[in-house]
Image 1 (cartoon, helix red, strand yellow):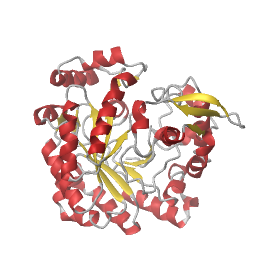
Image 2 (cartoon, one colour):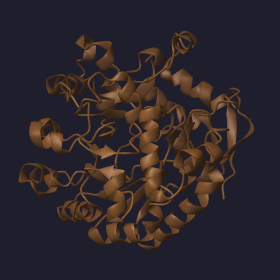
Image 3 (cartoon, helix red, strand yellow):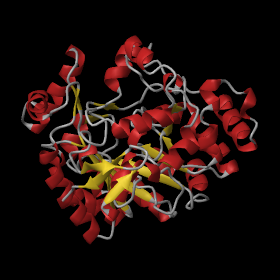
Image 4 (tube, rainbow, N blue to C red):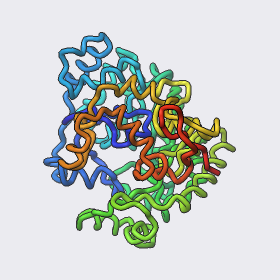
Length: 415
């Protein structure tokens, strides 16, 4: 299984280098955002034919990158070397859970955890698994890395019957809260990953956030459910199953209340009041609050929307970082984030960005020869793009003139 990859959220992600141990997740979450793409493109996915990454390849990549000996690496791997050499926090578990029951069978994540322990590399791990927090092989490693290993535990609601249907095969919410408690007890910073927020299921969030805080979580991150408008019969059946739990037609609701064409995210005005209330509640408890949803990036207490501790070395030169800067300074210019973008992405052609989906042959022809760094700048200045700063983030930034290079200067327009 090919991993690592650059995340699809590369424009506004603090951890764009993402690692997945396995091709398939042992859990059956009906909302899984990776299911649609993988079910159409990944051989053996629907049959749950599990493949792991090649640990020797990953270990070799990190060893050569840190030694500055990446000349012999294939381009698909060498492009990650600047990121690794800067020792930016790596995201682990973007498209499949690295600590689910497949890990219990195969142990590839454990093998790599031992390697990352040996080089003291910073990690942010996303999981719904709980069994490993009672396994000393994992927890003894965790206890050594309270300074640079972070865990996000995903829980979408505290209502066990609803969770049992929506998140098939996942440990119950109270079991995941106990996992937070065990991790916090050894000193690991833990974030409650309240993603996706599902209307009709996640309204018990005040109790869930309070329970996570009581268990030791120091932060919460959230994002509303997104929905695939191109869903085939199989995907529509999954949405129908969610609808029966939450009491309304989820697919129809998203079609009616989302301005986007293909990947439906709901209108900003439906989500921002919820983010405001959640932020207030989290802050009263002394927790940091983070939002990965494009319509709420200005609610972040730090540019890293996954809840990684602010003092850690995560990438902040991206659109999320620009929104954070504009909120605090009133305005933001591209030159403020450009150095960090070039540090990681300069020279990497977008067409050959590992794992990044450029969608079509026509699209690949259009971006031929374009580096990721230049693409960032083009997107910054594109006022019509749905993923640009002008239209893609709920209107919290508005163009307010240009600088001496002709790049747009944005003014913060949030509330």
